[in-house]
Length: 236
Ligand code: ADP
Ligand code: UDP
Image (cartoon, rainbow, N blue to C red):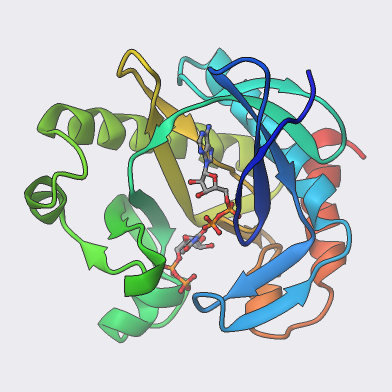
């Protein structure tokens, strides 16, 4: 399988056509951005780690019954995925207070919730991905009521699975962002990535941050933290 025309270059990945109209190749970059692109940088080795970590987790989720876009890892940075029409919602699940939740509601980081929360942002860079609720998503016709129900169900199932995959390697899953898409027949599948760029991951003992907050907050040791997540997950 080879890359054909480049369809899109995003902040973290490039997306290419292939000879099969139903398949795309995503190519992960080392570029890092935060705060809606205001902060820019490079995390050396991030492309390889996020590609490999995403594929490892997507395959484990697929085995556990979550339909995903994953098809085949082509190289350290490139993966074949099923082409989807992305539902323009960032689906965020939280188990522990952090980031924009802590800021918005004026609470400290690290409060463990009795049950996970779900929220949606409207995926729209020009508007800065505003927080919306499911009624807003319906009013904006971003998804049907059935699609929203399916997305919520999968998102909480993914949370239960990811939480246990992470617990096995001594990591607390604080929060994360998912994206879903529609295959040509309308089936909803998990798409995009699951990586230290899109999850908050805290060491269960030291509470050390092993995710993009090290970049966002200039904490140093960014590359080492990403590498540590891959090492614990995949043993390398
Ligand atoms: P951004 O667009 O936020 O800068 P990326 O750099 O990660 O993000 O770009 C990857 C783009 O590809 C995103 O817009 C994402 O929604 C989209 N995408 C992810 N998986 C698929 C897929 N299977 N089919 C089509 N588009 C996808
Ligand atoms: N997230 C993401 N992409 C985004 C926004 C958030 O992957 O565009 C992830 C982020 O890494 C964190 C979770 O979603 O794991 C919740 O992020 P939050 O709303 O706290 O926003 P942030 O602190 O990133 O502004």
